[in-house]
Image 1 (tube, helix red, strand yellow):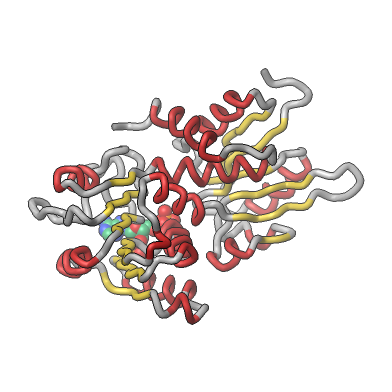
Image 2: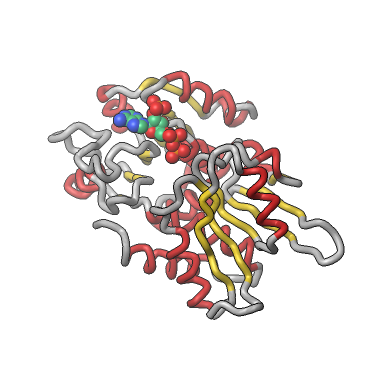
Length: 297
Ligand code: ATR
């Protein structure tokens, strides 16, 4: 029930209609009996600074931030956590509401740790120094590569259709010499992917290939088995079992689907807001259950 004590959080994006975040966060609030609600907040490009001031003035406790505002929102914030600054994107706001002074608006990013949480739940240990191939060089790929580097992965090759974007990612995230030494950028090509996959431990699809309605799409060529020692992780969750994950299943390779990162980053954001010494993996489990009821198989 919404009453005079209800605390509000929401999702800033454009568009936001198809997001699963309201479903999963409200399910977790319900499971914990918290008088909080999570609402969609459609914000047009160019309006994000005004929206953030409005949210703070309206007493919101925080928000998630999605496409296309993850970078544009940064100048509107009072402070930005180190990982969000280094990654160059904010996906969560925490708004400190104070009765005597103006609210403090902090920018955070839970995507990198959310990805690592999903890997661990899928029984892949990134700190073991293995080799990863990440396909894609957008915002999602940045969080994935950043998370892997900090977790202790041995090496990451970033493959992208547009080579310059992969090179820019590697230049940005490789500012620290110990990270640069473990990073490489290459243009995406089938033979390069097949060659790298033979020696890799983890393959991540951080592109939109395979996403509804183009469900027949896959990075991996048809009819070629995937090495069974390769863990295959797809960030696409619509559908839940992408063509790439079907190919991995058929080859006996372990898989991690896109709901893993979605719910782990969500549970970490939830924890930042609710601040109640929560069992984050239990929150993620409630969120996954709620999402699984509404996503395409
Ligand atoms: P996000 O923030 O979700 O990562 P994005 O910044 O739009 O989204 O990035 C989408 C990624 O998917 C990019 O790496 C893009 O490649 P380009 O940089 O070459 O555009 C990749 N991508 C999209 N469609 C693709 C396709 N058909 N084949 C290969 N890569 C594709």
